[in-house]
Structures are given as structure tokens and as C-alpha cells.
Length: 388
Image (cartoon, rainbow, N blue to C red; front, top):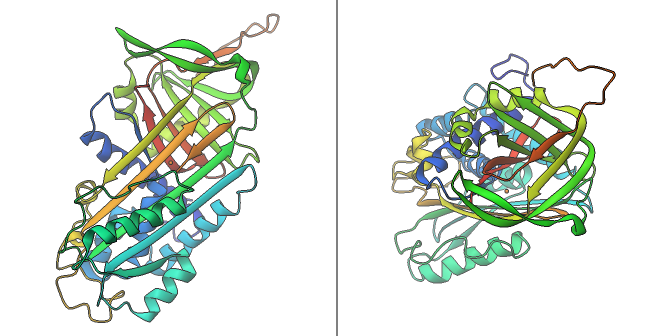
């Protein structure tokens, strides 16, 4: 369903989350060095912002709707569809796939929340808010927020908020946490993992543990226009997958990032075909930690961080001087033979008399990757692996 359609459905928010994912990734990428790995969960961030938007009004609300790419929808539909999206994703998890998300707003003592907001945030987002005494003991508050995040992510996310990032003047801190663990539908055999070269640049390489899968049927594809290959690795249950976008050239990651868009993702999905392939993927871990107070304003979300922010739907006595101090986001991913743990073609004529050689998907140089839900290809996590 196209955004802006007169008939609203869950596809609207599914697509909007993916659009937000691409925009947030591009903002974060612009502040990181080209050699650094990136990993985040834009889905988690967007849900936390939607939770905040539930309690805003005026320009603050309009900016959030624009930043979240849902400005064409009435607010009531936005929140209803976020609820639908959350239920869809969490209902797809089982013993082999675990997806847990948690959002919480910590605010200064004395900031009384409207009962209607508390009820809606709990009912729609399964979320809550908590008052802390930032003025008297900001360090104690920081530790309490970090303890909450660590608990919500099975101990994978530690120190969400670094030292000295909470002060006596802090009035509100928006936090979000997400934990994902999924087993591959087809597990890699550990005995086939080998030491291999990973080309960081055309002239520099390092050794990595490379997981290998001999000839088997996979969903793979290639785009000549984007000059890259795509591989979809499903998790058990086939409801979620990791998708890897591998540039043809060793130093093609920058070009690939320039092409990254919602249309790029849709085009690459169309390239996927079931065919025999030999795949090699490095084992890796990435932990991404980001303060979004600069990235979000670049995406049009400005008022939220000002003392003039409109929290009339959240606070009993909004008055003035209330604004979000920071938005902290941290995500963790580990990819190995068992699966993933995260806290984030042109037709060619073939002679039918000869068997087509299996496509080789050798991820031995920097690539982009995402964890998606399969039905709508909604991006839940996105990242790049450039340096082992």
C-alpha cells in the first residue's frame, strides 16, 4: 500500500519505518568515520519517538510526524498501526527467534503525567514512564536508567548512557532498548568455518573466521545497475531474515551507501531468486552507541529538544521549559554459525544442456546488512560491517 492512500492499513507504517530507517542510517553514517562499523535499530527508535509523539501537540507533534515519515496520516491511525506492527513482530517470535523491545521515558520529579497518556502509552506501546530525581543525584539516575536497559536486553546492552551525560538540569530522557536472537533456518557447520582474508580496502586485509556453506539453494540476486549482490538468510520460522548487500568491488561500500533508499531495498528484493549458491560470511560482533540529539534535528525533529516543546498531551501542567534533553540508542549484534544475536538481476540466457554454475556470494569485503520481517520487508535493524 502506498503512503498517502485513502485506504489506511498496516503497510503504511511498515513502509514508513523502513523509510525512517534509511534516513536515520544516512544521518548516523555522515557522522561516523568510513572505517567504523555501524549497527542500530531504527524500528526501536521510531517506536520510542512515536510513544513520545502520543503526548505532544502543535509544532512538536507535526515535526515528529514529518520526521517519522507518517505526516500523511491522522495521529490516531499512526498509533494504532504502530501497535499492529509491534504485535505482528513480537507474535512471530518463538523458542528459536526472540525479539524483545522496551521503551521508557524518565522524567524529573514533579513532572506529573496525564492519566490519559499513561493509559494510552501502556495500552498501545506496552510502555511506561518513571520519575527520577535528576536535580539531587544525576549519577544515581544514570545508573538506574542503565540498569533498566541492561535488564531489558538480557545483559547485552551495558552503560547505555555514558558518564557525565546526565546533569542536574536534565528534565527528561527518552530511552529505548531492543534484543533479538534468532537461529538460522540452515545453520552453518562449525567445522567448515575457516580462517580467511577480509579485504578492508583494496590494499589492506585482515584474517577473519569465515563461515561457509557449500552449494545449496538460497535466495540470492544481483543488480548490474547497483553493482552489488543480495542474499537473504532466513531465521527459523521464515518470518524474519538477515539481508546482506554486497558491493561487487572491494571499495564499493561508499557507492552502495549513496544508493541506499527505500527504492533500492524494493529493487533488490525483486532481484532475489532461489538458486544454487556457495556463500561465505564472516562471524562478527558490532555494538553501536549513539546520541541522537544531532541526528534527529537534521531529520526535522527540532522542537522536541527545545524548552518550548509542546507536551500538552503528556504533562498535567505543561507550562514551559520542558524538553527532551537527549535520545540515547545502543544496539548489539553477533552473527555466528548458529544464527544472530542482537540487542539491531538481469536475465541471462543459459544453455539448458549445461548445468548453471552456482552463484558465489563471498562476503570478504565491507557490506551493508539488515534484519527484516519478511512479509513487508520492514527494516528492524540496519548496519554495515567494514572492519573486523
